[in-house]
Length: 228
Image (cartoon, rainbow, N blue to C red; front, side, top):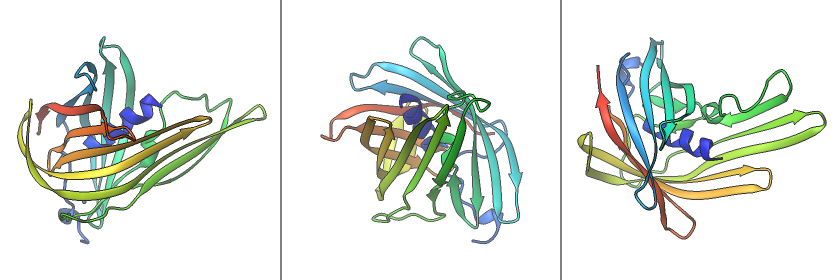
């Protein structure tokens, strides 16, 4: 479950009819890199995520970008090593919700898995008060007569407005967007609300995660960025 939350926070950190009309919510040039630090509710460092644009392809309606990411815990032990995919089509950015599937979580030779998802979307133009589309993914694993379903839903996405925010990587003008994320795995359920601060061209500068009582549980913040 924790890996799913980490992947979602990353995904947040990475929108016509022609490619040039796509708004770049994150750096898209090959070689561009950035790093996010993740903190718990007591301001204790829990890990970092380093990302790099490793591939980029123009398409007739936009582009497809590949992002290589490595996450480590507070002891610098690698916890996630994956490639994620983002595309722009007709001015809308789509984050593939299949990115939420933790790499190595199952042996495809031993299990049968089915996946149904709707991508996380960001439009070319956002404005205060705007509601953004929901997104979700559900996958069912069947093995030896045993079946288990996992589901993650992102709902209540709303653009609150513009702000200026300072972080270790600099000062950025950002869009503030709120959302709810709920994950279900067997008997385990997790529900949080969150805020993301997105700078056009630089990606997510900061995220905040709250429990159902509105108490801050942790945050992630941009510490480094190098745009090629």
